[in-house]
Length: 349
Ligand SMILES: [Zn+2]
Image (cartoon, rainbow, N blue to C red):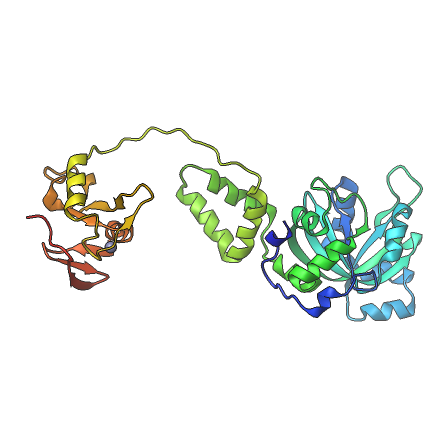
């Protein structure tokens, strides 16, 4: 199923053949789901932490990393995740997962084990005498929108996987990111449309409705304006791939047409479009054509369903006629996109 994932930035090169190990720039995941981590996240990642409040916990050398900065983006792990934290190198990326979607990513610029720093930032873990002392500092923080399902597919994780703690992506996932996206930064680029989960839910809502009202269409337009159709379609491909279309029962009021006249018209013209002559043989052996009304039947005018008001057309020309691109202007001529041309066969007289 991996083939479904590749879309943008697919660069397959020799590089992809190398074995991935953790000496390469790696991707780590961190949860942002529960209440505590959400609050911590807001405190130190969403808006950054004032450098003056953490200066005292950093060495001179460490401070040179943040010379021009006013805010620092810091995250931390408890001891239980020290193993994963040890595997991370400066230059690796951390993506934060919330409710089935990775929403932020940043690049690690410094790792520091410091309980004092962690306490200053977040206090203690509720009801415990420990804190998130395995800290790391991030730069290049950016919002992204990567569905968890994309990651589970790339890394072959279980579909119901939950990012429960700080962890590195596996080698298969890392290798596939290179294979299908050409690397981590282009992977993030592919998912930086600015679209959020709620946008897709809005699009899904609209797509599932029987009819679409003007307000919905406006919403769709807004979403499309800031997004990219490829990204949206890819998202739908994944979200809706397991859904079965539903059936809606509806009552219709239909104008009764005289099917004998329609059949006779088609037979007279051997199902050939009176505009272009096109027809095609259906699998059942019969030829296909449609019959258009010059004065629309919807007008319910007297005599509107008579042979002199009918023209045999192919589906394309029928649609152009309905949309007003094509107009029958006399018994022998039509106008298409402003240009007058003769009909292949004249109207019924
Ligand atoms: Zn035609």
